[in-house]
Length: 117
Length: 112
Figure 1 (cartoon, rainbow over the protein chains, first blue to last red):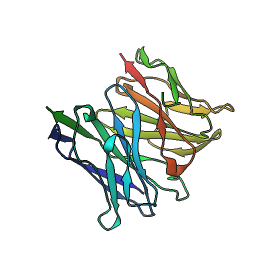
Figure 2 (cartoon, rainbow over the protein chains, first blue to last red; figure 1 turned 45 degrees about the horizontal axis):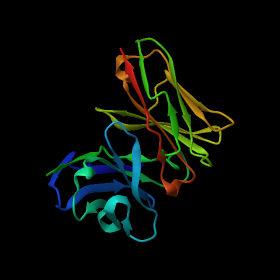
Figure 3 (spheres, rainbow over the protein chains, first blue to last red; figure 1 turned 180 degrees about the vertical axis):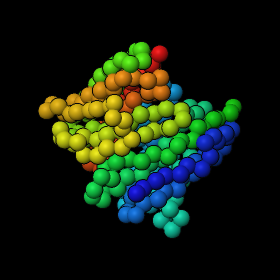
Figure 4 (cartoon, rainbow over the protein chains, first blue to last red; figure 1 turned 180 degrees about the horizontal axis):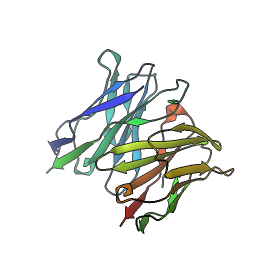
């Protein structure tokens, strides 16, 4: 079974400050890891993904995440927050293992990011 | 436009009724997934289809059913609706596991 835990349901930062959203995963096989962003009244948009290539992954809008197997973590960062980054962020895990979990994305509970002027 | 089309965008219906949500996947994607998003449960996986066949089931109620047609579009049928079924229902599609999903903009269902 696979699972994702996002630490902190709400994170608040000032504009220009570092953004750090935490994600820990559990998977019995090598995982694929994803970060999605959801703006109000919209669907989920893929920010970035880790699929066993480089451990530091760069995504859209200046976000990046680092896969750390020893810590089972995949934290999302952005050096300087912008007002437009305010949204809800979801970490998700998937695997290519066989059986009923194949291809299924399991999501964390989400972290709402607020950016103050 | 993500390439995944969901209709309708909004749906208001009464308890006990039945509704059908429709999803057209992104061109070339064979897998379709349905998710329910609510404030208390978060994003819950309902069901997956791959090229017309059911591949995986998640927390889908017996009152709910789905299918994927030969042209790869999918429908989610919700019957005997209850107030607690009010939620956002998302469809997503993918070409392969490692590519993640492309999500539609969702159908907001309100049961009154």
